[in-house]
Image (tube, rainbow, N blue to C red):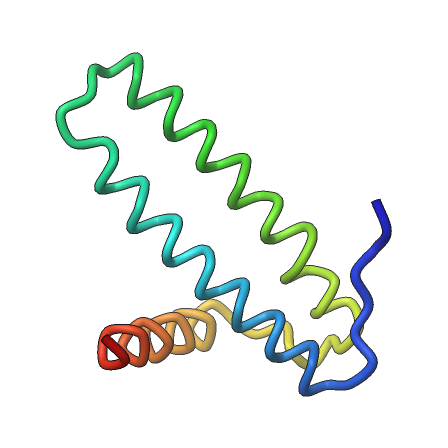
Length: 93
């Protein structure tokens, strides 16, 4: 598969932030789907979601950061961005 490329900082930032949104949505979905499942089924579901999350990172977030290294932030900043985007999603409903 071709490597994702980003011609501008804004396009890379949008992809990175969209990837953060996707990760948050997947995290929420996996927590919801695990309720009431056996330990064995929970393990399978977690593995499947983990693989998808890994793809989001490898195919979307990391290429954006490689294109524009200034988008690579420390953990505190990543957490703040994720929280702000979660609040924005919650308020958009």
